[in-house]
Image 1 (cartoon, rainbow over the protein chains, first blue to last red):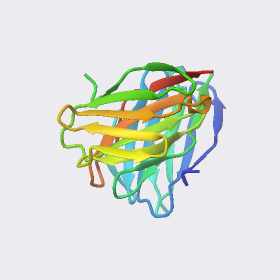
Image 2 (image 1 turned 45 degrees about the vertical axis):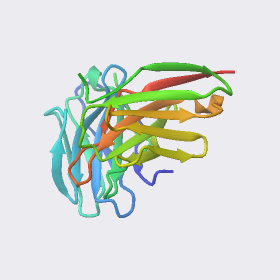
Image 3 (image 1 turned 90 degrees about the vertical axis):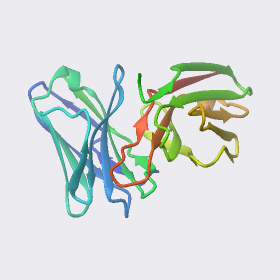
Image 4 (image 1 turned 135 degrees about the vertical axis):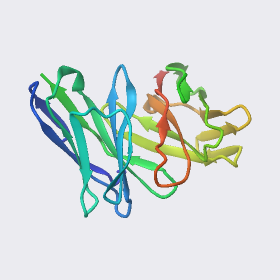
Length: 111
Length: 112
């Protein structure tokens, strides 16, 4: 168990809908990362938050947004969903040495 | 080219040693990591090495780092069927904003 908790584990939704993925980092970790894993793109970095503030952005679409709350949990919001958004979405938190600890992921299926 | 490169597949027989290779481009990388992903699961941190080290051993796992060639390898001794998974190499630097960069992963298939 990495100590990072993601909910839900599975999500099936229709195109055009909006979903929210939730992540609780390891106790004491201030940094949260979101990654998307698909078969053709591998593990793609989306966005990082550090102690409530956005720190870095990767290949995140404008339809996607995230935030980190004062209790350090984070949410990833995906809107106007398309079939191509179907993927595994991982959250990770890191310690000061940048060792990233991953949650079990949310498998999103858009139908 | 990509920042972190790995071969996509490796097939070995049970009981043999597996060697998974990785090359990276950032010479200022401070930490290099190996992660394991089993089907349907998240990435599990297996081991990591500081860039000022050449080798790290942890039970059946041996990590070798050639900093000059920017080459990292993971050797799994006495490979078991339970070692079948995707292995990701990653690199990062210290600091709050540096993003761990991952390779595309090597699928290790262990045959009985």
